[in-house]
Length: 80
Image: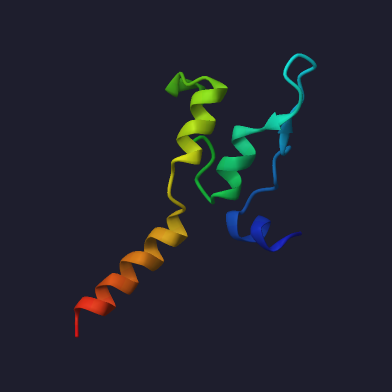
């Protein structure tokens, strides 16, 4: 079991979508997993997003762990 699999508590999904017409593309569920987001946070079908929209949303997202580190750093810097 990999370290990230242990942290997320779920196995890694397939990393790519294979399509003969467009070739291999990143799988949104894999990107979501890599970012440490809850399963379905962006990729749940109820959101009604296309694969391209999901990848755009994930690409423009912030990693939760990085956001926490940035906020803690800012809090420590300004609470002298």
